[in-house]
Length: 164
Image (cartoon, rainbow, N blue to C red; front, side):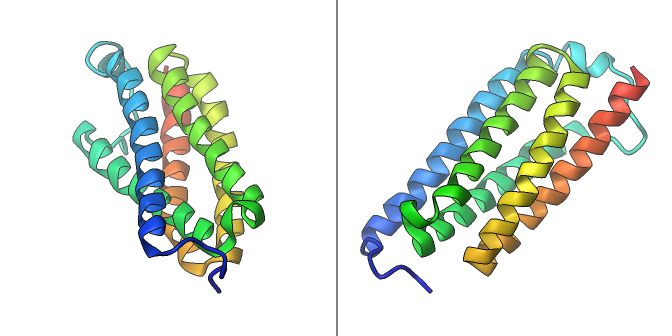
């Protein structure tokens, strides 16, 4: 059920754009951090056989960031900032851990530290997804691909740590 005190439709759309913009900024900073090593250090790492081609990461992350933004916006629409405070705080916390992963893996070139971050990130994503599900089923469903991808990323990150 949507909070009756929620802003009118035009304001809701502006908030959706706000959530998308926040994710674009986080993604952009992550991209800048990744660019520091993607052509030099990263290609030299030993990678497992299940490592996807490099071109797949950009499109997948773009879709995931959009799904995440819509999920957070839906929770905001249903619960508002006050009732949704815990869910939305965890959402922003996982965004920060997501960005930190890029800083650790690509910026500092520390895959083991990045793996620790990734495991914490995965746990926070799961908790956030469950809380989103409780507020809005579709918001919870929109977090499933993100959860799966970060689970795969943790596996990939762990394999890179083991191989290097």
